[in-house]
Image 1 (cartoon, one colour):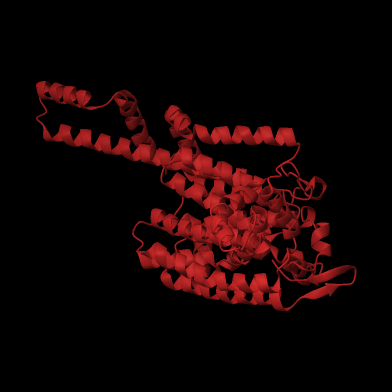
Image 2: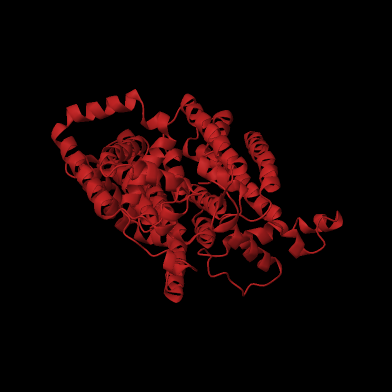
Length: 511
């Protein structure tokens, strides 16, 4: 019932807006001028012609064909379209993302239930609906862009991995890459999360078996004869892998006891993880081999193509844009402002300072220096950012970051705080290893991108908020600003167009 209610809620808040968008902006706009004609070529059966300005693989166009094919007989029967090509109008192609947004919301629902099984249907529906309202995700639901399809494929991949369907997860990961090549990073991230979950499952099984053996031995007479009988029974009871499990059990127990004392900290967690991976290397290789196939196929594609992007390679070079990770941290913290900017979070920060003053100061200064170096030497201003006043980052760059020569330095403490708060929030539910892998995965996606595009932040943001502990009041406090921002952004897009002197046609504000 919760899923049905959620689907109806998403339809209710997207379908009317979509109708208005198609009425006010009936023709392809912005990147749609590349995507729509390319999809229409596919509708004609022309799979050989490719627009050199398109940077992504044709996942969106294949999804469009799969979406329109079952609709075409009904459209033809009602006279809405006389040919398949005619069925691929701009409005119909845009509606592909409406359907994908509904699927994505349902995936959010299932992920919430899987991550927090104690969550009831009403709370899961509320959370999934708020997630579907995230402004960057919601806005591009109404345009024929790759963002919604990319997010949906990544979330489907993650859900399959949580459910330990690793082959399906890898297959969905390959689909995510066909939507957007940078999703190879999230394929690797999800594979790593699957390995962590697999090892935790194996460790729990080993510990349970060890405790069961101890319990049986303690309840039976301790004479030599009885001991031999007990051990014989235990040996017969175990499966073919018993010798390996028995040997690992003793070592794992000792390692668990010494983790805090001998292997404390992040390095200790990685050492312990490496040991467990080595013990279970064949099981891991067997279960996660499909992810290796995806990785090898992607490497072959990059070698053959000469670049990660398909077209417009000169406009999308790989650049060391380390300031981008700072922008992402602040943008994500703002998108979850009730979680990150409140008195309780400040109290935790002050408590951390009081308890470990030296460690706190060293880490803070190291992070601050890294942030200062990033904004000074690795902050890039892409020509598109400086010239295109249709996007909000244009105004943020000019009115905030470049408002004064000191501003980019004054923002660095806020960047550091944002990331500290994100780490603190994730640390309540995730391991240190998980958080570090996530940080490097996020960096792997946003740092090489020379252009500041908030929509690149969508997927890593979802991984943060999905794993954050937020009560019902917090979700409401997050959702209400989302609604306000969405209404403002779509109204500005629809009803405040402007013109360029050097180009005909109306221009519109957008993310």
